[in-house]
Image (cartoon, rainbow, N blue to C red; front, side):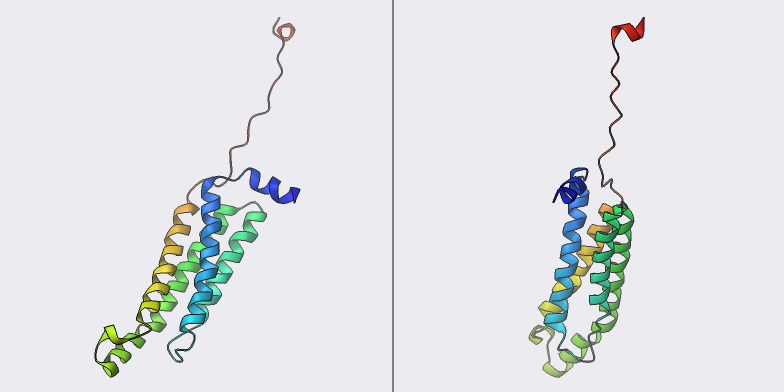
Length: 151
């Protein structure tokens, strides 16, 4: 427990935001696979893997002392997940709209939009915090100067 408290004691607000984005990436990946996993032929599980790996790399590099590098890798993974997602899912609404007549009648459309929006939010937020300082500045050592030392 002391290790965790010592680890978290020198972190700034952007680190905690990045940690929240890592959690959101995991939740987004799980939501994506659970909600849209049944659309065979239109769903790739590469975005799920990228979202989970990006979050794990951020946490791992944070423990190794490089949270900014971890956030940058998480940004690349989240944006890659979004690009793969768009590349694989775009044909489903078009095909479904042709069979039902209107895009508003597609029951999976809100989940498709929500998954894409959450992936994009994860990529943008992790990119923003990757440029911020995530650890507090080390304090200079205190020097005990007495009157005798000055004379």
